[in-house]
Picture 1 (tube, helix red, strand yellow):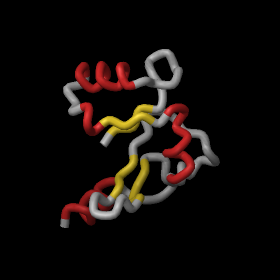
Picture 2 (cartoon, rainbow, N blue to C red):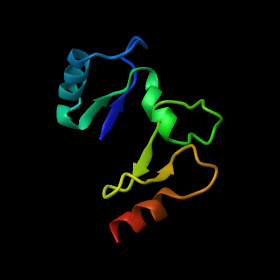
Picture 3 (cartoon, rainbow, N blue to C red):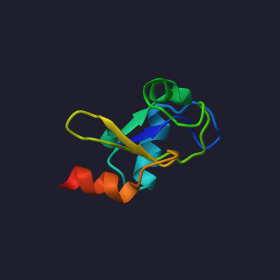
Length: 88
């Protein structure tokens, strides 16, 4: 799942941009979601940085219940252990 919060110009994306982006990156457009200005994502996910992040922003969610298990901005936690837990 990929979330687009802005287009290449830093503005809110639209459906046309979403489809073009997905096709240019060989990604199924059905797996790309729009979240203009990242409003929904950042209201639900702890960025561990006081609300500011760098992009791209990578997180791992448990597929069965969308539980937030890891992000690349976390002061602790290891991606390998997070992935191992989800795959076992």
